[in-house]
Image (cartoon, rainbow, N blue to C red; front, side, top):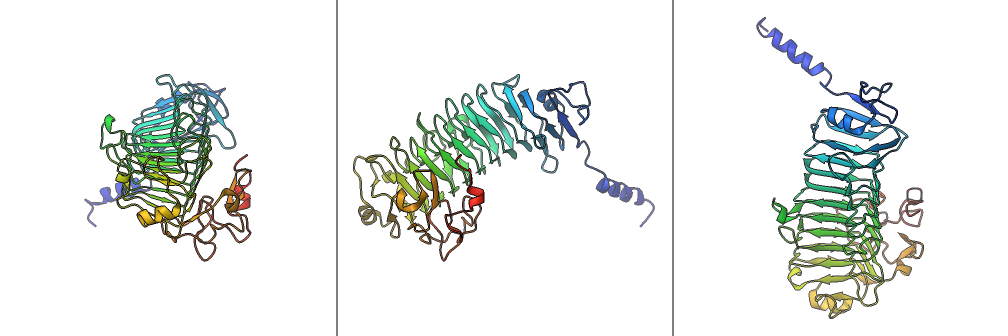
Length: 433
């Protein structure tokens, strides 16, 4: 090596070994002061001051107590995300909107950001709102009784919405992913009591972009008692090439899962709907609803039941039948292609379409441990045991149990384990308390 190259190599080694520039750990507490350095011993007082100060790589840990929300415009990076998190063992609550929008947390063009562990109840519009961004993670937050949505995203690619509770939204939905945001993952959330949809995905073609949400994964969610004002447990407008799997949807007052096009930039096509358990309430619509040219969708290993007096398993429009494949489902004897004006039995449906050759008619009492007690794991005598199709895209069940546990896949969101009762009892305990 020549002496001329030595300084450059030394600089490269220093850059490799140096700590990430700008990364810092900050703290917020109700008895802090925004004039403090934000250290653990001298914390800041407000989330907004933290949002105004942070940069890539920074982590803000927030102690328990009540706070106003925050408006963040600063992005992290893939290697240095910005994290707002609850201090270990404590639960901070956002009890007032941020100073600029009627939301709790508002991420405005802020990418590579995580918001984790907050209670955000009763905000004027959204508990958490994230728009014109990418790679945002919203995890383990509790959003109850917010004015319009629990969690809202718009034009936000690669968002992860995981392990949140979104309940009792006054106007619209528990979780709303909108505006052409591709590759969202909506996983492990508990979504209930929202006026309209539990989980709503809308490409919103009228708002710009291509109007399509593509390559979404919606899995392992527990969704119930939504839709009194209309809107399905899982609503898909302009959603394509996506997977909806291992969701438990019950006591829904509109439809269970709907694929359609109203404002989306195209029909909801090319999706896999697999191993979901869907039970619609007596005042609901159809367990599965495909409309407006929702072609090339695949429906396997689902339980699709309905307590309504004359509606049932499936309402599919004639222009959605092209490329539609369906089998190995536990169903009711009610199918329609005209909104329920006429109803077919399973036998009629098979003859008309050639679909569901291995599907069978069943009831909640035959399938579940305790349907009256809202325990929708499979009983030891359930006809859904080992009755499903092997699907590489569904390697586990709602609780993370590997599929299959027996010689074949079980039908529905839960896979029966060797111990009986379906799923892992320790994990399941208290899920519906």
